[in-house]
Image (tube, rainbow, N blue to C red):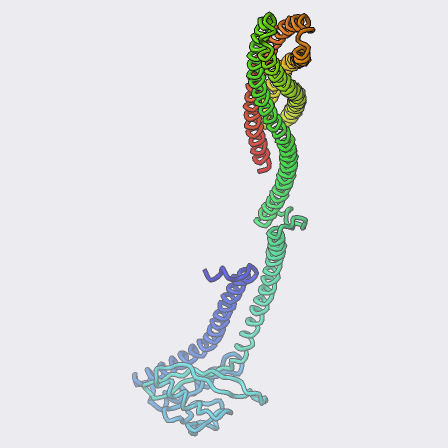
Length: 565
């Protein structure tokens, strides 16, 4: 509607102004009606006087028609009676003929004279107008005239009618200035009442507008401030019991809801900040744990590779030792056969000197080769011993890593317990990590046991190879003695036989020692296989540990992200 674009104050003024206009129109209509009524009362009196005058004329006309009086006598008596008609003090009746001649006048001296050209003080031909109105059926005409002895022009209303039998125009007039005075007296009273009522209505309207618009402006300003996010403004009208009071109560509800919303928002922001800080702490902890575990797993991986490489080298050395021990056994067998040949040749020393010399040279070369092989075997066994020692160090490192992993799993379990329901998944992964660390520790203990066994066997192998080396040295000395004995063949035959027996015994000892070396090499080979298998198992366990730790950290970060969200 078009009123939607106007303010409430203007809308309140609309019925007030409409009522004022309607009241003014009603008062105006009443004043016009009052004037008409007052004027009609006066003109009605003149009409009555004229009707009375015509009744008089009619009476004498009847006397004329009845023959009791002649026309002149009847008109004479009629004029006398009309002259006597006075009312309201100085008011009287008068008569004109249709030509404007005075038949009856207030001044007898003017009777018989023409008044056709008579004018009022404003120049109006009032006699002509009265005659015309009378000819038209009778009615009111007016003109301006002054009272006797006064100069002020006043309105005078006249009623005139035609008495047809004689052709006379009967009329009478009255001043209507008192009608105006009475009208303005009434009008002033009504206008005063209208003004007072209008002022009272305006005052009530102003009070109503102020009573409505002022609180509404305050509520509107409060709504704007509330829309701007402010809630510390006063709310007017809360003590009222009308619609303004309802709006004020609604405004209080809005403000309370806004404050509650802010409190909830602050609590939500604080909780999100707390969750974000906790998520960051968990992420930092998981990142540190990831770095530590990754470093430990890399160390384990490197140690496993070193362990695998060492076990491979140990296996290769053991195999080579076995091969060389077989060569030494073969050489010992040859040496034994040669000593037997030397023993046989001793009986035929005279004829077999050259053959003995050749056999002695061959024995010397074999002995040298056996000494060289023994030295190499000793070096390899020493390397095997050092590798076993290094494996022990690696196992110690793995065990330390397992203990550190177990400690980290314990810390993770504690943090999961602190996190409550959100840390259950974290606790499960931490328990798995702890179990894996326990399995790793057990595996390293088993590896440590195997390494200790390998170290013991290696020590025995070193001692056996030392004995072999010593025996081969003795063989070398014996072959030297044989060479010297060949030069002193005759004198040293007995020494040769003795040395041949010693050589046979030494050869047997070499064979026995070489068997021990071969057995030790076999044990070393088996230990190397065990170490290699343990290293592969440790590598698998480390890989599984890395996957579990990755899944654990992924779950922790996911939970931390969900908490932060």
